[in-house]
Image 1 (spheres, helix red, strand yellow):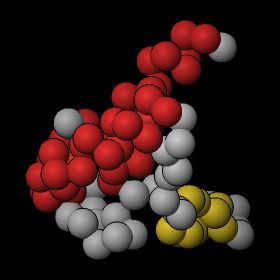
Image 2: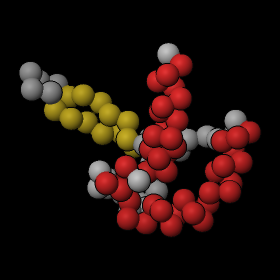
Image 3: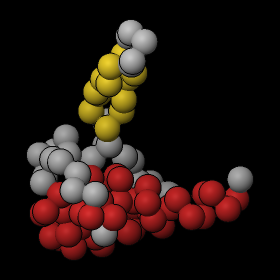
Amino acid sequence: MLVERNKGGRDIDGIPVQNLREHIIEHWETMKMELLQGTYEPEPVRRGEIPKPDSGVRLLGIPTASDRLIQQGHCPSVSFSI
């Protein structure tokens, strides 16, 4: 999984990326059903800030590892439909 290869940190639920595969396997049926039914709700994002070189900060919204995985799965279909 790309999320694992990028060595992401813990998500806002505290699940380390190294445990993500196990978490997805355990919850996949529910996640799949919600995705297919259109009822999947992403978790709230964690806020972060990155300093800008010219002053100020750039605000970030950091999704959970599970939501990043789902976003990566949907990325090809979204980018081709634009």
